[in-house]
Length: 103
Image (cartoon, rainbow, N blue to C red; front, side):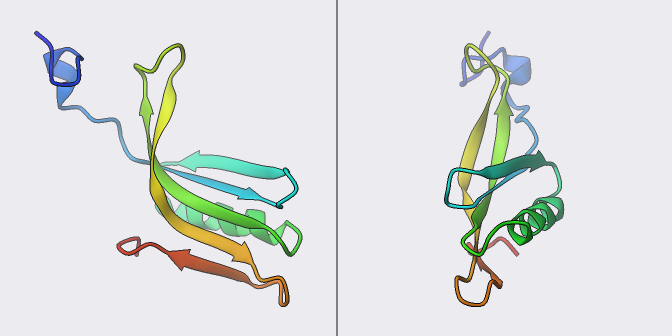
């Protein structure tokens, strides 16, 4: 018998763990990305990546779950952006904007 998702019933209630993805780019097509199971690590990695970029860098953090049933390869199912970050063009300071409920 299948669960509501089309998966076998014994797997229907086992949602993959929440992961935290981060991405940063320099607005010229160069950037870095990562994934972790700890939200604080995603925040620290995003901050480190932006500090290493020119003044116009930007980035974000999102939740994701790994979908092992995606075809032809496993893929992430992304949630909404929870954190946006950018370098202030004048001061070079990194400015964070958090979605409600992040912290």
